[in-house]
Image 1: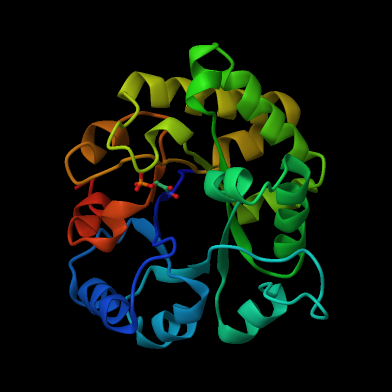
Image 2: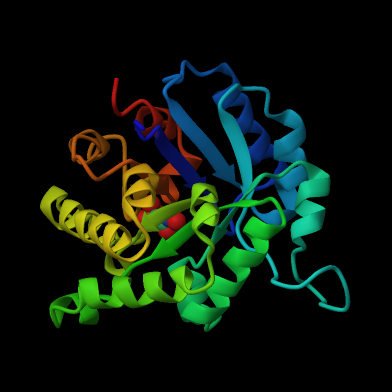
Length: 250
Ligand SMILES: O=C(COP(=O)(O)O)NO
């Protein structure tokens, strides 16, 4: 099955009602490649606004986190069932900023991912290594460790609700994008791991996104790589060039 190109916009803890309205309006009016699946992830406080204002076919909204328990006494957490109630079909989980700043472990991320998928919310699952791990030649080892923790929780059918995002921590927010070769090498290793440990169908069908200083200029060369199926974009998703990244295959 051909993998549909996928571009996610991770707004992180940025934006106001006005700025998010403006981004959504811009997407509603933009000429977007119809062969691309687009998901934007505003801060949780603005999910309803984005959901209600978004009219563009092929563009959905995502939360930036969920909790892995049913509704209840979990102050401050984000509920899967309430995302469904709001009509939010996606969540970004395991972002390196939550793994490092909030100490989310491989197991916590895997548990949240399984809980979200079981609750009907599809997941952009993030992985990636630190600069120290890359310099020590441990990139693939780290990503495989993260994948193994995820696979241990998932049933085979769950993978159809998962998009993998490889985001080298040293490229996030730094302007230092991975080279095409660096990115393709890790994407190829991820797909190889999926083939060996989950199966051919999941390996062939799972979109693997690259994230880390993607912009309107570097996206085209990255998009040409056989195992790069799209992007998870941070800073540039807040700018008009996000449309260029969505259209990077045109
Ligand atoms: O964290 C990122 C990437 O951020 P930047 O594009 O700003 O490097 N995506 O989730």
